[in-house]
Image (cartoon, rainbow, N blue to C red; front, side, top):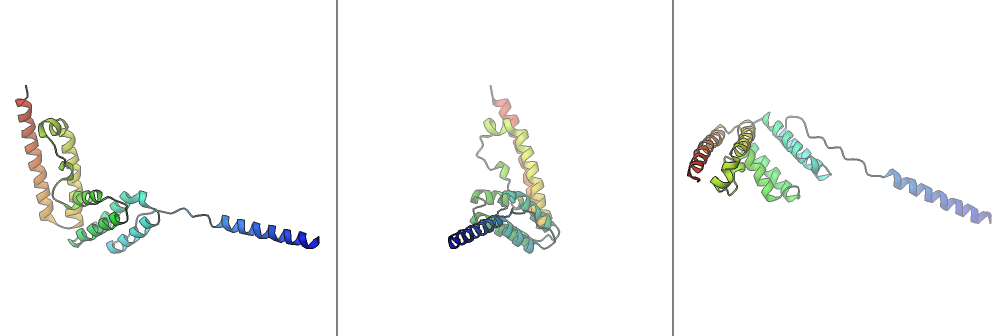
Length: 183
């Protein structure tokens, strides 16, 4: 009888120990903090690691911090680094191909993502003209960050700025013409 009680007590003790061990292995909350420093390659590596371990919801803040770090050491090679990072994000399922392409073009392309829709200018673009121009102006600021401050590509930024100015002028003239041609 003593033996059965001791065996039962031992089983209970083992069960409690196992239960305690299981409870002590509860998953830790993931801390997501964008990288700091001045080395873009190291920062991209740290961001990839964080994004793999559960920080996907912070992708935008990580991207912005990478852009800030790259501003400290502008160079044309930074375009390729961001392209590779966005391709990686797509391959990891963090972004669709379209999203990765739009982010890259928003910062490093000359053409405006804001104007890539298939608009019927008179019926769709003109009623939204102030909103479209505001979106383009915001995107021009992003292009200034990517093309000028991150990549040091002054000629490309000048072309983007010129395209913005020309689009603004053409849209204004077209919308004026559309207004006068409608009954």
